[in-house]
Image: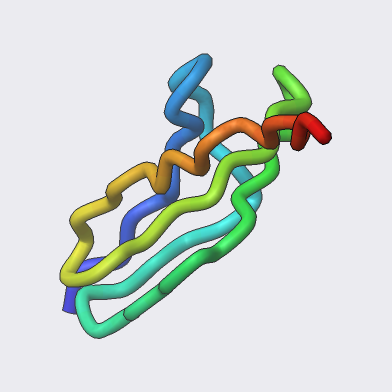
Length: 61
């Protein structure tokens, strides 16, 4: 069983979390203590993917 650190997608540094082969994450808010970015990620079998959320748009009346 492999265990790896989750790396920040912006700065590439280690975060405070580790994941294993069998870890499954969906819509997980990943926070980087160094660059102070928070990103939604999904992880399955040590593969991370960034979840892009559309920017909030104002509604015109």
